[in-house]
Structure formats: C-alpha cells, structure tokens
Image (cartoon, rainbow, N blue to C red; front, side):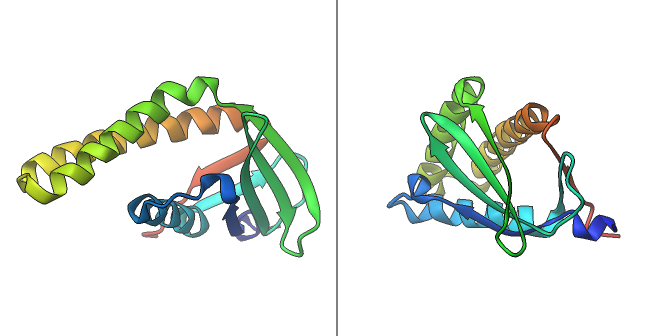
Length: 145
C-alpha cells in the first residue's frame, strides 16, 4: 500500500467539543483541516486506509474512534487527560490573552503571544504523538515537495 493510503479522509469532533465561542470553533476547524491535509495516519496492525477519525470524551478520557473510509470500525483508543491538563490550561489562557490583545495591542505583542501559543500547541501535539505511538503512527507531511 502506498503512503497516500495511510491518511485521514474525515475527522469529526463529538458534541463535547462544541462551544459558543466562534473563535474556538474556527481554531478547531483549522486543526481538522491541518490533520486532513498534512498528516499520515497509520493505525498499528492495519493494512491501510484512508481512515475516518472521531474524537470524543468518554468517562473523562480522550477517545479516538478509527474507522475505514466506508465507516467500518477499525479500533478505538482511550487516553487519560491527566498528562495534558497543564498544557490545556496554558493553551486556554494564552488563547484568551491573544483574543483580548487583538483589539488593543501592537502587532509585535500579538506575534509574541502567538509564538507562545504555537509552542504550547507543538508540545501538546508531541505528547499526544508519544502517548499514541504504540497504537497509531501520526506524522506531519511536508506539503512543499
């Protein structure tokens, strides 16, 4: 199977991720697009996709439900949120700072806050990759090639 078949064709967040804040929903939509366009996704022991991924909360844990492109269940994985709590708090706080600063700060301040946000985002993404490494191989693809 080609590397192109180890990809996501659909990513869905369940209603536990819904918010009334349009800025947060926009960020979620951009993250989903990024996963769809720039990542390989290879569940351990499976022959190839593409795959559908549904992310939900279940009993205080992060649940990843993976199906093939026809919707046939492949596997589900559950992760404790405990290792992510500090990063989630920091990320929420820095995003709020960014939204507040948008109205009254200079571009340099916005850029500094955004760099901090990206740093926390990257740290959380790497932690997630580590926690899933035995179950799912996820890799960001360089789209400039």
